[in-house]
Amino acid sequence: MTGIQPTMLRPATPRPAWQTVVGLVLVLPAFVLLLTSYVEPTLWTFRSSFNRFTGLRFNPGDESVGFDNYTKAFDVGLGSSLLFGLSLAAVPLVLVLFLAPALAWAAARAGRAGRWVTRALLIIPLAAFAPMAVALAHRARDLTDDGRPEVRLIYWLGTFGLVSAAGVVVYLAAFRRRDPTRSPWPAVGVAALLAVLAVLAAGLQEFTYSHIEGFGTSSPGTPARLMFDTSFRILNFGVGAAVSVTALLPLMLFGLAATVIIVLTGLRLEVDGSSPEPVPAKSPTPWVVGGILLVVVLVGTGFGLWPWLSDITNPSPVDDSTWGNTWLPPLVSTLVGVTVAALAAFGISGLRPLGRHSEWLLLPFGLFLFVGIAPLALRAYAAGATAGRLNSFIGLIPPSRVAIPALFILALVFRGQALRRETLRQENRPAPWSSLVLPALPMLGLAYLVTWVAQAQDLLWPLISATSRHKTAHLLLLEVLQTFDLDRLPYGRLLPLPMLLLFLLLGIAAQLLYLDRVALRVGRPERDHPPRT
Image (cartoon, rainbow, N blue to C red; front, side, top):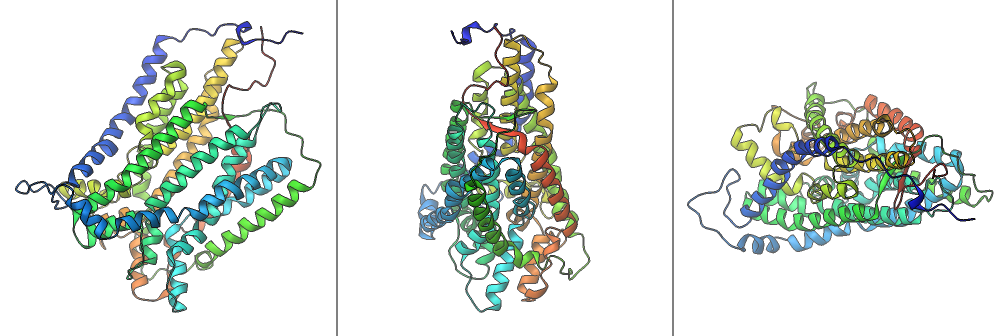
């Protein structure tokens, strides 16, 4: 019997002109903010690295110093800091390349029960994301034991559960398939490549563990810490700009590589509805392997998080407004950044103004996909100081104006749903716009929540922009650390217990009711029904 060929399908309905126009218009706000909050600061930092720099503006009387700032940067340890930042990625790379995919495979083979148990337990390190609390708790323990903190070890312990859990969520999506004849391994391979790039980028920009464990010592640090020390302690802003540029170049290359991989492989997220549930494996191997690996992850998570979770109810030494200063400014930047990112994602991958080439519109954003606050912090500081925004509540708002990771995640969701919708239209089936928009709404909510928490837990920007008048929980904890009252560190100021419990409940609901139906796929769209001719 002759198989059904793609040419036998009915042609798709022509794309209306309004769809192209509206799609491009929706990208404009994010593109403008990309220019103002990423491109211009990058150019400014690059120019600053070749000049004598005051921290506020160029001194017009000074001439260019050429590569002198770069020479001084390497003299004060830029080369070793780059190697140190990359060394932080050693254990996370093992987790995302071996442990996480193995655990995800076992959970997927164990069926719904195995997936749900794994997802529910691994929400603990995701909900308890508070890197400064972890770093402080381990430093307090080391000081009590008269030991010298080892930054790498503390970083590996503190991120063990987080990296493992995030990796399992991604790989579980890659292992989900509707067509048993199609292998999930290409999607797993693409996910692994992107995870490697993300882990390397995180190591180069790590600041919290490096700063806390090196507080008052000369222990090695990452490029982010070296930028902070040279700029805000030694007040050599030109050298700090050179450090920032040196770290920025590989980060932009990582982002470019990730974007090209995403576009060329057709990577997308599809939200499955009532697709058939895979038949669990009859062999006990998945349960045994999954159980052992899950215990390993939970034990590692316990070693990393328990030192601060056990003291999360420590009282604060003062009754102040640190909660509002810690959580409200990031909420403002989150609402702006994720909203414009969602509009751009819908315009690019939902309306698809350039057809199958639409995802190339992600390229300018992809250059800064892995760029955090640290490489561009000098520009944000200079702009805030010039405008008089520092040392105020407004100054506490993080400088990121476009949530680029959220833009990419939402674009992948819209891409998956849009391709499904085009397939339905090609087969002359009903394809309402609600089938494109509604499945992405829970992911949009997760993007708001994750971006908010991540920005609220960042240490670098409050350390630069805050004072005792507008104190955040980060500064409060550092003040207590300097008093050596290590048994009374108020960790709950960073992440209050009620918020932690709320994040746990929201995370479990999202894992079981939504993320368990999200599939990460590459190549041509899969069909959940025979194609019509």
